[in-house]
Image (cartoon, rainbow, N blue to C red; front, side):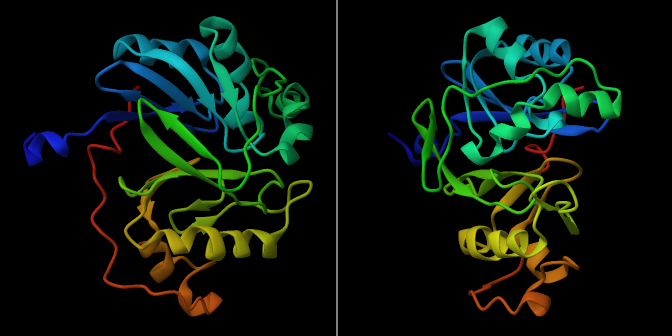
Length: 245
């Protein structure tokens, strides 16, 4: 097998903005088998399923980072339409998953459904799609059961609402905790490396290295994080950031 064949990507990714809150739902699929998963299907079920159909993807799973409406509102209907499993978040967010419809009423979003996952996630768990493994880090603070899903070889993380380009997740919602969120970012995410790219729940992609330099909430100069920060943040792969709309 040639080096080129060995390094040929196995997975494809598109970001599908959903709901009026413009939440980044990620569609990940195997180039070979066309089996795929949604990460955080927040709503707009027909748009999501249309994206899967456009790329010829059979949905075999839903992965949830946390229980807020705009990240989990369409999970139940995806499972009904496809028969797939819902995996995640951590069990400490079930109270949010039980109130998706109530959350929606406050924001005028009526298509979200309460949901119970087929399996919760714990810190250190592993997810897999066509032989590609993803790690799981429990990162409470924005919500108590928030998890981050990441692939170290690809230098890519799905961080939900833990971290954003130039900001961090809100902690003024029920059971949020600002210091816990800061600790989650510095102890669970920064050790994954400065070149780790991330897709946040809202807004543009960035890298952990870029946020360690410039983020006004968690830059190393503010937090005193002492982990190695070799080199500068890599240029973000724009193809990966391509949105389907």
